[in-house]
Length: 61
Image 1 (cartoon, rainbow, N blue to C red):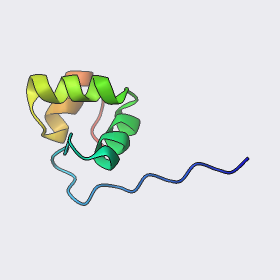
Image 2 (tube, one colour; image 1 turned 180 degrees about the horizontal axis):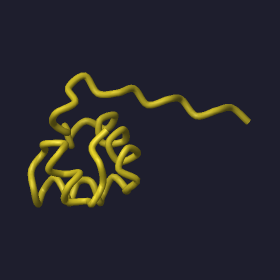
Image 3 (cartoon, rainbow, N blue to C red; image 1 turned 135 degrees about the vertical axis):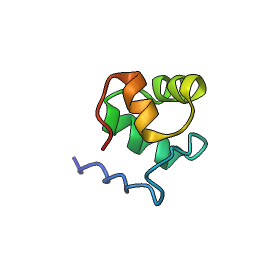
């Protein structure tokens, strides 16, 4: 069984591009939430990483 590929850190780290699958996967992993939970958070509070982190009760990476 092979190891899963590492997800690359997004080029821009202050905002989450929720439309980019790689960004969505990276930030969902960083915050320990599903892609759907991340999408809902961005919809509610915007795409700024620190704001999403606060909304989710997590620390921004």
